Structure formats: C-alpha cells, structure tokens
Length: 147
Figure 1 (cartoon, rainbow, N blue to C red):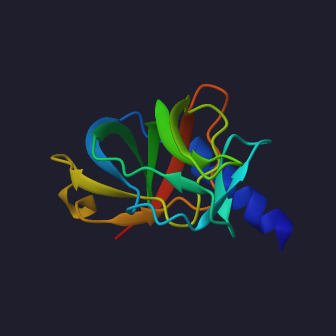
Figure 2: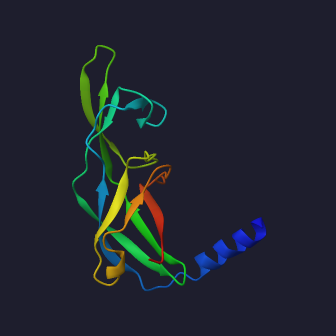
Figure 3: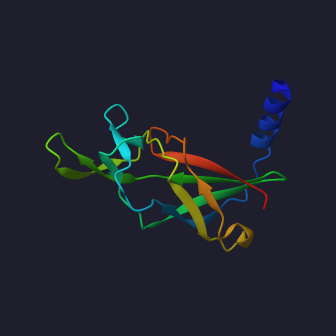
C-alpha cells in the first residue's frame, strides 16, 4: 500500500506541467479573539490559550499555479510576514510582526483563490492551512484536487 502511494506521489511530482500561471489568493485569518497560546519555540500562536492573537490579514498575494494532470493543481505561495499580538505577564498586549519563515499555520488560517483567469474553476475555493509549515524562505505549497 505504501509503495503504491509513494509511486503515485512520485508520478504526480514528475508530471508537473510547465504551464504555470499566477493567480491572486487571499490569506484569510479570522478576527482575533485571544483563543491561542504564545509559543516561544515557534514564535507564533497555537490552539489552547488566551494570550496570543493572529491579526487579520487583508492583502492579496500572487500564487503560482501549476496543473498536475489529472489530479489537480499545486499552488506555491510566499508568506512574507505575520502580525501577532501577545499578552505579557502584566496583562498588556504587545503587537509585533515576524517574518514568514518556518511559520506554523493554525487550523483557523485559510487561503481563498479570488482571481485566476487561466483556471476560473479554482475561483472561490478555500483551503485550510492548519498544520502546514513554511520553509526557511517563507514558501509553502498547497494542493487543490481537480474540482
């Protein structure tokens, strides 16, 4: 079973088409409610606390879409920065911005494809980012199955 899965993924990666196109993606972060805990180790927020808020993100970013026939599409994105508010030991909130390198996405963070001229069937698709980690340059890739 595992050999079949590995073979399928290898086939998927080797059949990436060179027909890449840019599409506009909105990284959606809900309004902060303080339902996260601060993680010094990851310099980010995670579920289960009341002392960390991921601030809403309102900007659009370009994602590079690569078709992976017949399975779907790979979307490569770049996370440049994240704004966090953290409550200190005196109960004061401090807001700071960290870069997007090695960032752990929480289950409440998502992206929505909002404009994609070459692949209009992708517009409106929302992808949950929970558990995805950016690389040491802030890049991450999500897979969208064929709609």
